[in-house]
Length: 186
Image 1 (tube, rainbow, N blue to C red):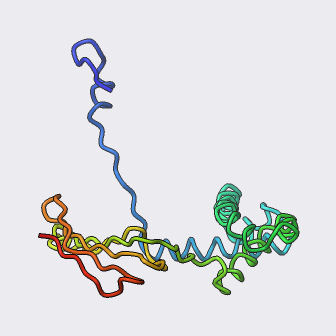
Image 2: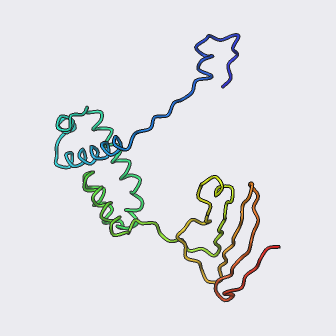
Image 3: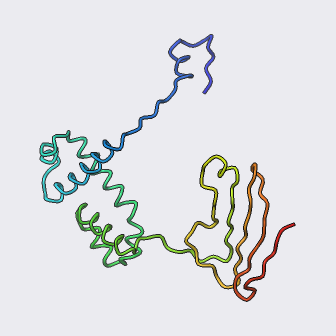
């Protein structure tokens, strides 16, 4: 949005150039909030009301509601993975549980690594070495698709080099019937 400085008030002129400051929490404050959220979930699971939880933890009711909303978003984010693992009958039982029981169920499934990332079956893997990122101190390897993957029979692995924004294919390795055959770019 652009303001015509001659026709508008001083307030709008300042708004056009306002900087948005960023707020960063310290590690101690982050850990304290994480502990409080766990405690809110436990107390709410015991059947206490929002007001009683707030009194017991010496925080406001809006803080307790916000913490419960964060737990709700956590459960909602994992809902499709839970539904996939549990099946339709068990999924209905899961939805009927309280928030604490749902979180405990998700943690149990995660511990069993049922909700862990699945390996993707693919026929082509591209490994890109980004020299610019390495020189800037960032991670230089990129994989497409992202790891972990199972390379299918007759698949190929392509190695690319990226320098100053330009990509160059270094070579390809074919897996399967052509195991060990390599092509190198000119």
